[in-house]
Image 1: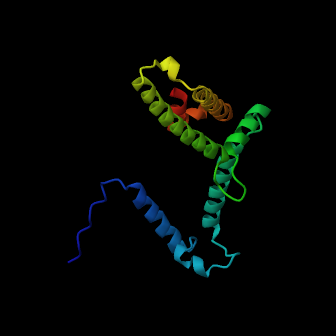
Image 2 (image 1 turned 120 degrees about the vertical axis):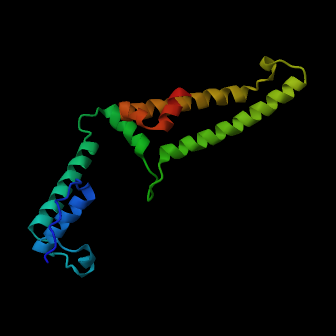
Length: 176
């Protein structure tokens, strides 16, 4: 006896199943190469027309995306300079100079706060008021640090405009 025909599939295919099906069709036609064969490919290997079209389309989209991201032709000289300051890296490396300087300033600020707290506690224990306790170098260093942090936020905002607010660290800098 012949087997009864199965009813057509009633559940819609998910994306992975559709991709597998189209990949199997392309492989059966011989127009899609097997990724496992990459080690055997020559540099000028012909991938077939459909695969080549897909690769060209992917490369074009990637180029468009990077051009859109890197299109700074409409930026003014101030914004270009701000971006150059924010994006500068040490020679021969990927370490950002501006972020490194900011980290050193934050570390110095922590040391100043520790010293200031300790000094303030000693002063209050001696029976003096807070106005009598503040050392001049602490006041000056606090103003310098405040100026640096303000400069940091202004430079980053000048470089990135509203994209500045995409980073949570920038939100923190802006609020504090």
